Length: 239
Image 1 (cartoon, helix red, strand yellow):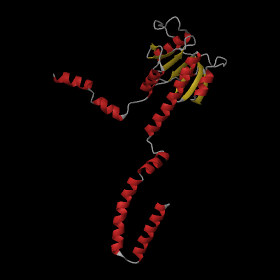
Image 2 (tube, one colour; image 1 turned 90 degrees about the vertical axis):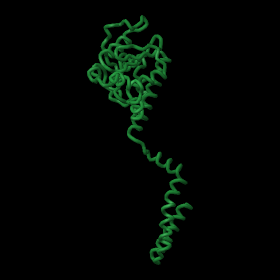
Image 3 (cartoon, helix red, strand yellow; image 1 turned 60 degrees about the vertical axis):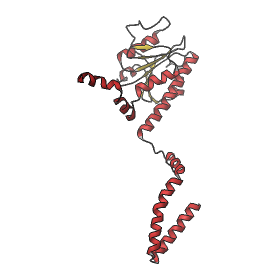
Image 4 (cartoon, one colour; image 1 turned 45 degrees about the vertical axis):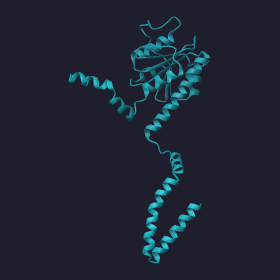
């Protein structure tokens, strides 16, 4: 309030100087204004920063990253709750290849992703728990979907059943990331590009999902541009 009263008083004096035709006072006040604007920005920098953050001055990419981070935290939480409780689960995350045909084999959901909804689907007393949940972006496409079984089962152990074979098969026929939670052991496996990785821990789980579904920032691209390995072809040509 003191600042507001001071500004009002300054404006009043400025108006009086114009009315009374006092050029020296006007020029002096113009000089004061130019310095005062800079001083206000410096003095009230924390308050201005807080105000800007409150009105959401963020780029589109920042919002997208924040939404993805929230999704990643939620799906990680759900998957490892399944793991702790030995609840079998099969999740397919769509990448570039469409999962529309596979979605037709199950029950259509088209619902926003939430941990509560996902966990309720795989409870063994529900009719949708036997099959795969297909996820596109941050939406659940379908539940109880039927996946193609892998022909080559050399990567699978005796403790792995139909759920793992279906997950491996889906990863062989598309670029999707398939998450499998074993009902017997509670271990989390990830299938991608026809390769099954078993016993994935939460930190590695997040790293794999993030590496597939987030693109590198401009800064990272610039750093990679100057990586020594990028100069090897150039050096060979020169030699």
